[in-house]
Image (cartoon, rainbow, N blue to C red):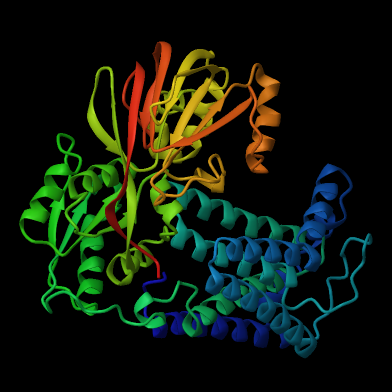
Length: 524
């Protein structure tokens, strides 16, 4: 939808308005077939005035999605977008909803059609009925949500589910208006056409997508040859259509002055290191990696210290590195940042341990509860519902048994603790912006450690409260440490994870922060 030319959007909008205008003309001239449809006899009156539980439900639906209800939903949606720094999308939502409301009111006054005579007597409406304000505002809001789903939701299955939910919601609200006798069928049909048309008209005038950095920022100093070489490492399992993705990247690269990209696809046997090495050997000036945190970690580990910047196109479930760097999750916007953003030197962390080959991580390492979550995720469920699979795994692992651990920071003596989980982070925030390590910075040369020990199920509540409020005092429930090197030892074999990938149980993790080891492209 968002990739369509603006003229196409305008054509669709004009089609909706043309059908709407024809419907309004036929209604005002009482065209026979439509009159028969609207005045469909005693059954309609019976449904509209029936007593019972259905009537109560219908009245709640009417109240929830009236003007005030839709205003609250609009404010919440726009506010959430502003908090996530999607200003253009927030402006788009507010302007379209206001315009739809004003247009609905103006047309009601112009057409002047009365309400059905059999409408429910409770809350009897004397205003005009064509078109339905409930239907126009709900249809506009639902289609706005569809636009946002296209922007932010990667999984096709999840998108289809959300589309279905939104469509059912619109149908329920429309049915509510007819069954309560507030509107004729043509009223709600016209309302839906008007709402959809207003959103499409808005898309033809103003794009809710983030503006390209090439349009909004000063050009970066040109320190590379004019024929700049671009390599792309792609995990094909993380994109719906690899061919379409290649076409988008190639087109945007050409517009930005890059040579045709060379493509390197990851495999199960090699999740990214070999591809990154091949790109570096071929002399790439920039490597774009598209995949989850695991793919990103492998590529970055290979390119660390080479001076070749890495552009990240997040396509996984967690995408924690991208979130902490402010890289947008919308595919085109992330590619735009990779091509036009600025280079930032970030830290990497070397890690070793018993039964673990020397490796690195960029986001977080953990022993205990958090690793048990990663270990317990059902991969089939993860493919179907995404991050919800982690929630289900977390609920199953919530009372992971406490273990005795020893922690040494910067070579100091080991301190002893009991913990359900120990997390060592290079960044501070988990999914949904949860500030587990709020003081962590990805370029400060330091690692932040948090030791969590809720003694029972209810103790998770004050723990979560303290994390959300970023309380810094330490005790047995939440203990924090900071240093450039960290060693964690457990008394028994304990699940371990690196950047969200389970690496097997063990008793030790040894970590050393390497400051400024990697160059990544971030928004300017």
